[in-house]
Image (cartoon, rainbow, N blue to C red; front, side, top):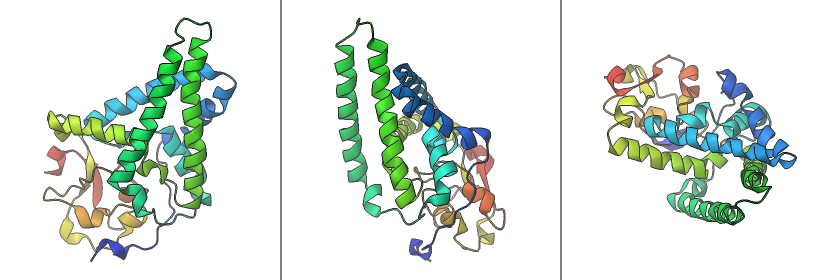
Length: 247
């Protein structure tokens, strides 16, 4: 049974915590409120620090559980989304790398331009506005992709997602992530009926039922640990567990 088995995707609840239900308010605060008070953009620095730290220990957990834009996509836009298949080219390594380089070049250029004005009275406003404009761009572009394709389309090539994967790779390299990361784990592979529902409800359209490894873990680096597949498994075979628990 191949991955092409899943041709339709199901809209289902993805917000299991208060952060995931209301995190989108932070997006609007920065992207819209920041147009009037640019210093609000400086809050994004803490977001970046948070996602880099959590990814070192647990991959893209931030994307599925804390990300304000993810909350916006899953809470407000899922209901009006076409929820169609994500184009393969948006998930390709070449596109992801190319967009990451393009984004980071422009972002760094703007940051350096602001720092050249260090000491001016509105320095913090100018610095904050760099983050505000970036957040607004993601709101507009990511929002459009969410409606016309599927909510987590932007997340396929999001530069912050790429940064998380780099941080996670470092965590794996030094042996930390292997001990701390929780992954979608199947309790008994023989009982899985390969219905594909875990894939049909997955925000990233991944295929857990086809990819469990010898430790009964779903080790795809793109998994955001959102637990949507766990909540929707008809036989309740799935859970989030670390390596020790899985074994």
